[in-house]
Length: 231
Image (cartoon, rainbow, N blue to C red; front, side, top):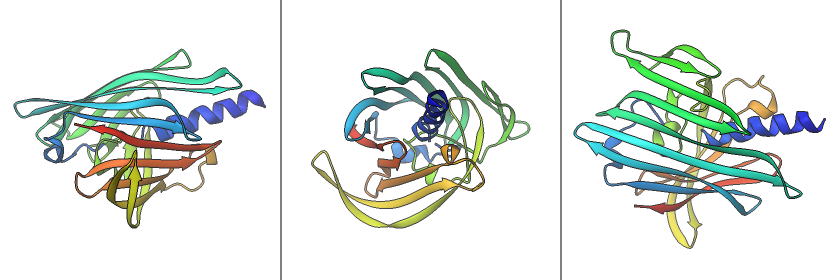
């Protein structure tokens, strides 16, 4: 029973952690070099999820570094560490690659744009094949995740359909700073999925910067991803 619970817990964490778009409106982020987010569980900081932006002519490279660790009674029950790299030509995603170490198990994604067929060619640890260029790659730096109908897991390459609902406008405070935000709910389209595999996030988008500043969900604790630094 304990092993089953830990496996379900691992799936939940990976789904929430890696929840950008092939047409990501890169121009909205030209003024940023870095987006740093901290990860909390039950109000305790357990890791980070950071994005770094580099420009080279019409190309934009977004590098993602992430690490978090979950402990239970001083024992580590789940640990994730890895990196990803998205490359855009103007607004179009042309490649993505990632490597992740999950509890000492290696996972990966290698994605390239097939210009002739106008599709993504994916080789991943869980899925290999074609995918529509309308898919997102699940990273929190791009607001386009709120406009997509499906996402590609940046850990394994699997594809999940989603529904995004606008909840309302809210003023929130993060680390003493006030934000005027739009609040959204992101859920799985397939309601027949097991509870531990469903998408179910609350997301707050800062209207001024078009940056996602907060994500929360509840599953075996209260989880929060929140903006720590924006440069």
